[in-house]
View 1 (cartoon, one colour):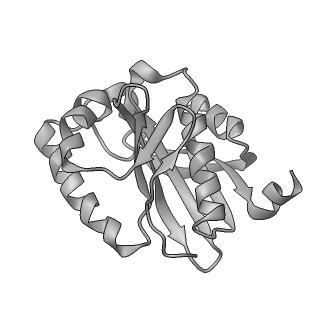
View 2: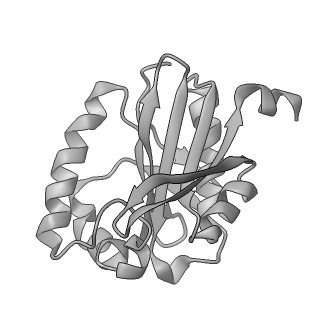
Amino acid sequence: MNKVGTRQIETDRLLLRRFVIEDAEDMYSGWCNDPEVTRFLTWPVHESVEVTRYVLNDWIPRYEGGDYFNWVMELKETGKIIGNISVVRVREDIGEALIGYCMSRSYWGNEYMPEALKAVINYLFDVAGMNRVCATHDSNNPKSGRVMQKAGMKYEGTLRQAGLNIQGICDSVCYSVIKSDREQQ
């Protein structure tokens, strides 16, 4: 793995960039306080913008290490931040990155998340030197699996009772793409 950390990525409609503390208000009101957004995540809704600021104050210093990958999704046209995509776990021994993401409900269904996920996958392979990129979702959240499919990830299987989110233990559906998959395309 190359210790390149979170660098800015641009897509047709999105700017994926590092978080700054000034993102707290929009992050809180956009997705962190929405129980529908956090329904299948590992963290509960933020009770106040102070919680969001606390989280950002934890995240922002991590950018300096070179092994932290966490982007805010910003609409290029308006500058509005709409979500978050990050590497939630790295296994350097096999060059694997596990991705997690969430987005403001008002932007669901506009293909922003597959666009961001494709860009992050490309970055992780081409810049960070990963061998495998994977993501999982609660089996009760098939829309997340469709995002993974649209980004070119392949279904690997469902691990029974292998996931945990704010609702409790769940079946974990796994998708991945490996470097050789991309080379064959």
